[in-house]
Amino acid sequence: MTYANRISTPVNGGQRNGLPGEAHAMRTYGAAHAPLPATGVTVDESYKDLDTFITAEDHAYWCFMRPSERPSFTRQLLIDLEAMQANIGRMFAAAPADQRPFDYFVLGSRTPGVFNLGGDLVLFRQKIEQRDADTLRRYAYSCVESGYANYIGYGHRVITIALIQGDALGGGLESALSCDMLVAERQAKFGLPEILFNLFPGMGAYSFLARKIGAAKAEEMIMSGRIYTAEEMHALGVVDILVDEGEGERAVKHYIAGNRTRHSAHSAIYQVRRRVNPVTLEELRDVTDTWVEAAMRLSEQDLRKMARIAAAQDRSRQRRMASMAVAAA
Image (cartoon, rainbow, N blue to C red):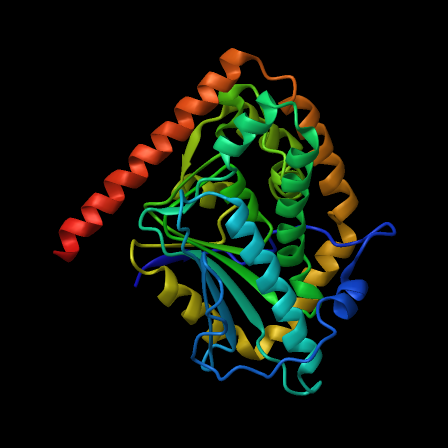
């Protein structure tokens, strides 16, 4: 296995300004009791769009998105993520102090060639045409609240890792950026294409990128709308560990195996990073409010461009499904 490793602190913040913060999250992420799941088995089979399990040897909770619709942040995926995060809180609340359910959280995708393509463009267009800003705002808040839970390590010093084995675009990249570390395979592509239909990525991209690579580079990435290779993102300092195609999961396991004994120190460093250069939930919500205002100003021409991108995503999904069916035959 060949890979390039950069474990120089990525970034992100965690002070709350009166909103739910890390100390608060340690209380709110789980009050009801739930039995500690057996390691190495599925954690919860009730999720429609998630595959979740814990591995004993890694002391890690693995969450793979497996969307039943397009590989974007659909409402069903957000419902599942919210339920999963609440269940994680209950797991920690039920566990004895000296028996943590897990120390690492890994976010990946079961969709071949895709991590996540971002926001639900069909929903966006529909709600903009209906002038339904409230639904757009609720959707956006759900997105940033999900990312914020990753960002603060669920309030329990969990180190969060994004495992990117396919394209991470728009909100897909934003969700990855909310994690402490990014592990990417070389074939993965990254980008923030919202500028193509006269919008901007409003669910954390600026907040996380500005703290990770600086405001100037963050704005360049957002305003260009260009697609970046995994190698480019590694050179920029966005991707921490770069590996060959097919080696992503092994690289995550290798990293955890080599750093399990340093978990306390590493999680403390990430906590310090969040204190020194915080991203607050208030900030994330404020940015989404600006995003909703900008979305409601889109012209019919902008909405047609959005629709074309959504249609292209659907065609790509259909081609992948057809290819998988042929391979399985």
